[in-house]
Amino acid sequence: TAQEIDRLEKLQVLGHGNGGTVYKVRHKTTQAIYALKVVHGDSDATVRRQIFREMDILRRTDSPFVVRCHGIFEKPAGDIAILMEYMDSGTLDTLLKNNATFSEPTLAKIALQVLNGLNYLHAHKIVHRDIKPSNLLVNQKMEVKISDFGVSKIMCRTLDPCNSYVGTCAYMSPERFDPDTYGVNYNGYAGDIWSLGLTLLELYMGHFPFLPAGQRPDWATLMCAICFGEPPSSPEEASEEFRSFVECCLQKESSKRWTVSELLLHPFVSMGRRSEE
Ligand code: ATP
Ligand code: MG
Image (tube, rainbow, N blue to C red):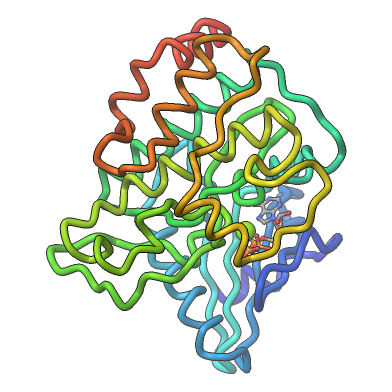
């Protein structure tokens, strides 16, 4: 309710998204800690569209692998606030930037959790479209949850090809750059799998796989590499299971890419399940 939001005390800024700010907040009565994403009413149309999309999807989702939403507040002035569960270790991108290294058993656990999340989303006809390290939230328990539904899409029978250039281009699958395939027989779900493969490889290598370590992305070169180059492959020293998993995700041809249900049966993911027991 509207009064409830007044019971929230802002503790610190956790991050800025495009158009919004995420705060760490404490509920004055219960002392519970949450994350609160605030978007101002005077923000531009794109930002507002994204926040409405995010609200719409968070309202529909209820999974341990998707960041939980505890409430949505809309003020008369048009301000919107989304109360979410607080993930105390930030994002996989923060960990990466703090030079965390990810062992294969850890990566297997991450893969399993993201796949569980995508399995839930895809079963609910939701395509995330922006899977990348900075949209995967982590907590102390090393639970990984999918967040940031600003550019996600709820699939229906009619596809709208004009809506194609959304998300972070660097993690976009080759077919999303191709106007001929996009929209016709387009399987949006496969795009999330590409992004997952790229994300895991980045966590393994410590830098974005299409670029040498330390190099800033130049958009044109990157797009050429994604569309016309070979997909990146894992370093030689990686296990057979990891290399194979990444290869199944990073098939350029979207029809050859494995689906979530297939990947959940992959030997690399079984490693993640074993270490969970
Ligand atoms: P974009 O994906 O377009 O770059 P963004 O990721 O910056 O946008 P958000 O996903 O809304 O925008 O979040 C901004 C930052 O706030 C995140 O990167 C993360 O560090 C932090 N954050 C968001 N949600 C939570 C949460 N539930 N718990 C803890 N931190 C969060
Ligand atoms: Mg984000």
